[in-house]
Image (cartoon, one colour):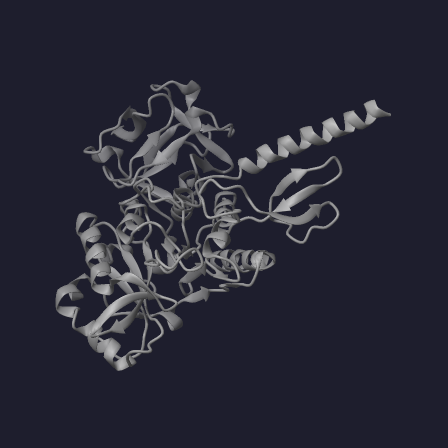
Length: 462
């Protein structure tokens, strides 16, 4: 009897240890609550073709982008605006309030200890250093106990002589990226007329902002709203631009909506929901936590990770619009960027031809005049580049071998990274080899050299 009990207890303990290890595995690169800057993705838009229209761009963004003060119930970020831009964020949500003649940055009536003027200085300094990029700025007049909207517009106009030439305009839904580079696209959410050209935020965008999360129990409702918007944006691409807020708060802190963690730390464990599979399953998409021999707890999961997995695991997802989050990690930012490279043509800067799998999908990688058939359509997801369910592969892992398609296995010879300058780097070995259009239409691996146009490719879906 005692032996049987001990065996069962030992089995339960082993399962619990295994599942606690699984809980630790939930920590990843989608949530970032540290002052340490994220890896640079400062020029990723340079890898997109100039013809890409505004309403086909998938853009990583931040909600309440200047909100770094006010405690865990208010703050949405640790990183500065410039650090967010350097990390790849291209949509900023700025809220301002007129204070003694100046536009001060606020979030929910909490001063963010900065001004709109300073934020614009940060943005324009970034664009001056990275002229291939475009920054979308939603400007919202926060609650106004000290002013009227007319005064807000007047204060904004006073900044026009200094910043006016940085703003793109007029901008339409089909405006190509090539005419927006080095510019700010203003999304207006304030009353009164100003000299700044702007799109109307309420009229020109389809927005999901189901922000109120009354308690941890409501987190799954938030996920259902986010998931619905991801699906709708993909189905309705080419209509209006979409904006999907992963952010939320109210009864819980923004950090919890972003992470699902027990506390705000980047490396904190997931919070358990006190729900169990298979007895009940009110949160079917949320992950399994620790287990007993007969059931497993369900953990809460943050919107950053849930959205990242939805984008990484769907090779048919071609458009998600603007994805605005709190405390985004590099993985969430990269996953949003990669959606622009779904079934995309990769156009060589050397000869204007497209990467092509010779003779369909059984031959080696070459360049060929662009025709857009399936053997010229490449999907980037994480470290893999896929065509028709197979992965781009360096034959036998040999640097001088042909580059072909092969069944996906995740080995080093199938791992790639699209660099911000359009180079496609192999992650096998010492990671110093890149795709190169060496002569004629041959494509081989060569020592990476950012100065060579034969190693740069721009992705184009259209």
